[in-house]
Image (cartoon, rainbow, N blue to C red; front, top):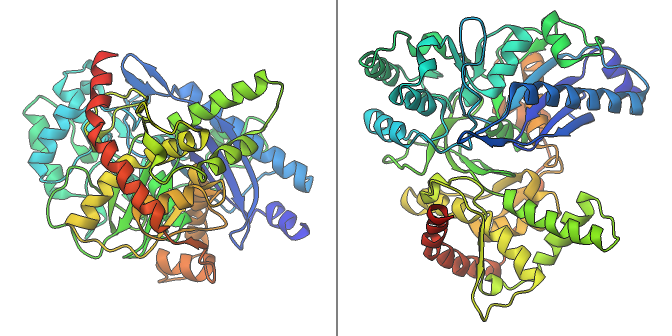
Length: 530
């Protein structure tokens, strides 16, 4: 305790902050990369005028509340104030669209990764580049705005992601880590920069439609892990810490997306490694030995935080509907005079799922709160259905929702494993789905039919991964790669807890996924009728 206190007082601790879909979290780590304090706050997106969004007021209120919670944890544990750190890193949900004019004003409300409104742009750009452009990518949102002749397009001076925006306001630097940038526009892994041929094709395309700006003028400059990305300004310090105690001048690493921090947090940045992050959304990241044989519209090509090519299966919907069902049981418990905290309630219901039938006993759900590109759903309608003779038990209900949370991911992963013959020896899992020991891990192993490992630090997730990237910047040995740093300095001797897939679970999930795919037309009809 005294050693940690000295680390904080001397400014040697490192801070990682990540803005997830439902929670903003900060993790402070010591020189051994161990979390020594944390803070968090809840927030939620809203559907406004057809777009999923957060207001800028939401962003800054959430950040300040999260940072305040962190400082209170520091004061509670160590009886000191947090005034400086060795480095800070900002991470957030990848993709999306934040466009600003020359005065720094947001031109249209922030359009998050959850929006599936860019179909026309995606088709045209994917065909032009011969490269899959997902609906949530920044370039898709930008070009859709061009196609829709939105008034704001002519006023654009800067386009960035949520992490890039916060970093800009805290440091004054218009930069972005290569992993997050790969969710804005395709990256050439040979250069670690935006793909030049595709950038030229895009410029020619938008010039013909009257746009005077160029991609390199309005997109952030791309940086790789380990590079310095500016320092905290006086104005930035006041934005983050309203108490005025945080000192300016703290070094920042490149801002990253949640995919990159997940790779760092699971030591999955080297070739043949893979990780899966499961929370509000779920995505699997596989670092490739070679390029894919052909274009797959279900597979995104992004990069590690140091620029290596990664195949990404990204699913918009994972635990949102599952969490809503748990909320119903919370209401019942409270109405019955019982009080349970989230850990107790989720743990009880998740463990109950282990008692369910391997194939869920005839129950089916689609937890589509929003559209789902993997299964070609334009709109989301959370849906639960069962056959008349189904075994409608609590155990089967919970198992169904857990399986359903992984249904679209399974469909996307089949392309990699069956069509591209990508081999997986192990997946490292992190995120909220894995918090209840042995449940999410077992369900993921059954769905992917591959061993799943969980690190002890899995609960810290993205913000811890962001802190690791900031730590790498300030303490990396000369010539040491990010992968070497993580393996030698952070994860040495820590392989995590490994769970092999259960044969009966695997068979049960295969039966479930067959029915899941057969019933997708029902989910599609629900979107059109309701």
